[in-house]
Image 1: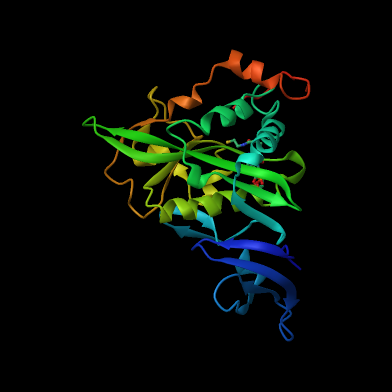
Image 2: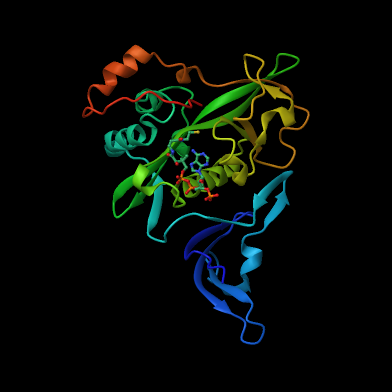
Length: 272
Ligand SMILES: CC(C)(COP(=O)(O)OP(=O)(O)OC[C@H]1O[C@@H](n2cnc3c(N)ncnc32)[C@H](O)[C@@H]1OP(=O)(O)O)[C@@H](O)C(=O)NCCC(=O)NCCS
């Protein structure tokens, strides 16, 4: 029987549910999932387990009907000043030796919070038992259209989950939570450079589908875009510019890293 993992799940239309039980139809023996709405009057529902794992077409993208977003005891909240060092350390742990020997992302996080491009309203941490296990941050970025007009969009990253907690829904929880907030804030679209296998589940599509290119004229797979409202990127081809803060000085990053406990740097076979 296909067991659906107990815990929190995000429905592609934005509502969240808790999976309570796996069961079987008493006559047909069909596997069923019993789940509870995490909104309104917390209604309890049942549906065939096979439907749980289907993908659907939504806003031009192929996305899972439900995405697992972790245990019920994982909390998300805005990052607070007193969290800074802990969050920078988890960023270091998450990125260390992932894309280069060592990493610079913890230094990037350290300097970006005071940058004019930073969006503090979307700076969120995930916690389990009071320990910070994940973080996501966003900056303002822009598309310059073919007439030279600038259109504001947003970009997230670094997004980090402590290695021991990766692949257990924490990243998805942070991403869905903040995408919903960004939509409510009236942001138009999110443009990122990231893992091309991971982000499509959130509705991201290749940026080239929208006629977008990077400053260097590239349209590679990790360059992805998400419309926060249907059609918000239509008729908006042009060049994407991320905030300058992402162009970090690696010597400064290296000095900053010395304020953390020593970690060995390894040569990476497959950099992004
Ligand atoms: C990438 C990251 C934020 C994802 O968060 P997470 O909590 O581990 O991921 P989730 O539990 O939400 O999702 C798990 C799914 O994502 C996939 N996934 C996780 N990391 C991935 C990666 N680097 N590339 C491709 N897929 C990835 C898993 O295979 C799993 O897929 P499945 O559901 O089909 O089994 C986290 O793994 C991390 O911090 N990685 C190191 C830093 C990093 O790469 N940051 C992002 C840079 S673009």
